[in-house]
Image (tube, rainbow, N blue to C red; front, side, top):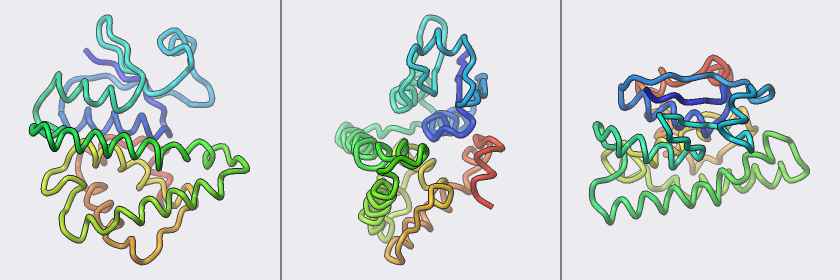
Length: 198
């Protein structure tokens, strides 16, 4: 059985929980308090990074790699596109999300001196992709995919992170509500994540 060590407030862990619930498979989630990580986690991930997926001899600790592994191991429903061109496009989106959006989260969560700039960078980055959703329901078109999984935890945390989107981002916020209403999304949330939006 797969075991996921998952931070109860960690957006990267939430991505993996969403995929596991979308797949509807047997797995164990071990909730980890990010501020008080257990010793056995340090043995699995020396830098203490979350999430960590353990299956037999395999240990993975980067959310997008974990999710691609799960998608290939349990192909139904398929979350990475079957078409090589679309799959490459999906990977480019995933890479850009990490570089342009998620790279700023640590500054916001730790409230560093760069936190204000980080909020602006995320706000502007999200506003730029909002027009996509005037033409299609999901990031890659008609089907929910790994790209939607990847960005969903950030969209859920916008108010929590103090990020306010402008009016032109309205299509993105409607898209976010579509994702948040998915049964697997709801099941995958921890009580701490639910408390982030009241």
